[in-house]
Image (cartoon, rainbow, N blue to C red; front, top):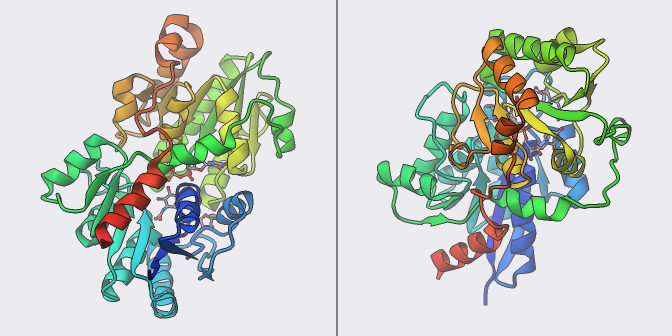
Length: 371
Ligand code: UD1
Ligand code: UDP
């Protein structure tokens, strides 16, 4: 029987973390030929994930530039994808989530009249400019895709409200599949700064902050709140692997350099990240992925954004929206650091994003579609 040629397209760190388990699952199954193209919208942060999971892409567009704009990412990736599609001749293109690579991957496949499967479909804030440009990217991909792999029931419902009911599957999120392979009891960190941490003596707060819509005043407020937390609580250690965006690097170092209980470190590999999260006390983040991973590890999360497209863990009680105002972030962090009851109420494992079998479910749905 002819194998289905499935081309997975991704370009940034989170897409790679969530797509590689699927690329692998398809490669394991007889029915598929699993190919992979990266735009390399991220270079170092993508390569770190490719290295950890030992994946060598079949195509690499290598588009990243320092301080790249949405225009250059989109134009370079779209031009590059024409050649990739001509060479790979896939039966199906898979894209993930809501980045510029995601949108371009879907648009290119549409131009080539190749069906698209959207992994992590149906997330919405209903605010066109927040997250920006992600909300519009995922809405546009939903118009193009033939198959929609939704992590949760709420995501399925969002698509239904937009009139999308065909080819919709609730699969869970593939990040939970990834998490099950990385977190280990006897783990040794690759990053030396993490090996120096004493999780018994200090309450470690894991921080990440990188979103484009937080650039400028929101990021100034967030970082200023973090500095205040570090000054106020000397039994706390803030660990912040800083995204390689020059905008983020500059702001983070300007606010936090020189504070003895703040560690600004380069991005860490995903195995370090997941094991750090499993051992920390609390997570402060504007990342999408961390909002999904931390609840399943039983860690409270304060989200440094005004809204979230991931309400499930808020409903489950492990995630709270802190917003982007300094006083709000400070008040909510102080509460979790001083009120044991408030902390305990959030520190319980919740798995709203699946049971670690999302990849198998997606593979089965693809087979069903083509049969
Ligand atoms: C992108 C995605 C965002 C996702 C985030 C994950 C878009 C528009 N944004 O945002 O949805 O949440 O990735 O992290 O698709 N850089 C490096 N090396 C790297 C990666 C980035 O130097 O490995 C620097 C470059 O200067 C680059 C800049 O970071 O120009 C910004 O990268 P970009 O992909 O444009 O935006 P992100 O903020 O990472
Ligand atoms: N991550 C990582 N190293 C880091 C920071 C994040 O491996 O230094 C992982 C994290 O565990 C999650 C993903 O990267 O799986 C989230 O990526 P990011 O925050 O860049 O993007 P978002 O999820 O906001 O789109």
